[in-house]
Length: 589
Image 1 (cartoon, rainbow, N blue to C red):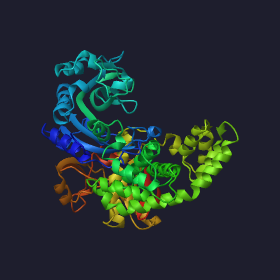
Image 2: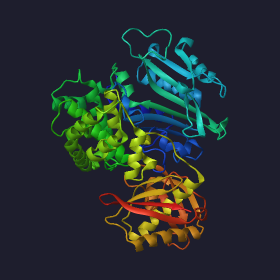
Image 3: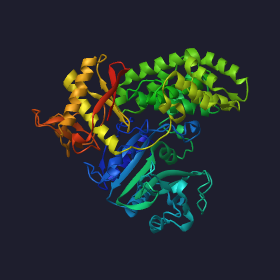
Image 4: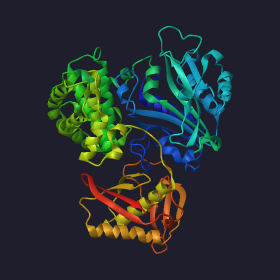
């Protein structure tokens, strides 16, 4: 029986390597070129370009374990199976194998490698609707490996369909695998509503493109996209219905018990939330994100502060988060960024806990006051709790719900906009997820980001390195290391250099090579990012440069073919985002 996270991951990777898959490292939790989502939310997220036709440097078969963060259903954390941070095992086919191979390999791995009994397995397939037919093909493969019709459920789009992420794009039916965790023998007939059937794996068959007018047309390239959650699968393998009793969380829960003097039994919800939120916070801090009131920093702040609040509910009076996170870091030696940034993680965590602890008790007293005034918490009062006591709006909503009240969110957002012009990142939408926008304008801005990176190095010095980027159709955002504010003259030089390369109409070329070859050529890479052995590089050619190019970077794309397509580049703002890290926002006209 597989007991450990490490063993499960290794078995999965080894199995799919035996099926001629190439392993890629986990991508960053911070999406590089996706303006619609704050974090990497699924294993497929970093692979979108290859699902839509771009060639992957390592071929058509890929396997990985991807770290992910999802906060869209954060209120469910506290039960046995929900997490904000999780690891997703995945095997991928970019236009290569299809339903038969994917399903048979899934069945083989579950039964032959993991040792799960077929009598405790069931599956679901897409039932079909007016737009797309019933997925009989998947069902026939399941029957071929020995499943009776009673163990195959046909469910609707809300259960067995993936995508598209936006209004249009790749999508298709999926087949989900369930394992029986009840104490009594598994019933002969599969009922997806019975909670003793736990979903452990999902094979998505992206065979359709949803057009902008709402039609589903067959894709030229059919893809397989699978996902198996490490935490939930490990619980199933060990006969547990509670993920927090696996070896992933058990040491963390023991530390919470030690600090609080309480037992897990009877305090499950509080301890699960603390363990989950501090694990997610640890990995976000591992990406060198600082707690703040914007973007990823806001999510991080909310997670830490929610954990602190539940710690106080357990009766913990002293600072405690660092002691728990020390255990979490030691649990994940395979993520080198945690050890490398350990001091940063501890310092930021400790400072955020201290900032909030001083205002938590006063804020709770203030909440009790405003909660007495009516059935609704006024927007002005919610904003006061946010501004003066550091309460994320979601915490105020949670407190209000506990008292059977609601919060005037519209009023809160109105107050927030008056204080800061944050209409586009108001917290009502802070935790939604989505996928990359590869529009023509975003593509132009992406290539402009490469020019900006090299222009900064030319003007400020070769020690400048990219620390992150975010691009949407309106603007690009580029973070880089630099110890001080840029002067107006420096910003002007950077802007002029970028525009000179745009005006020159330079060709942009893509090629593949080994990671070492790319490094030897001088290709730029995002600081701290992990790359496979074979990578794509994008080169902005320039015969006036000694090396025959102006910019060369490791990147997945997409990019324009010629810099003349970009338009006029204009810097909007330059600011500090952390100690030694500056940010430039820019656009193209």
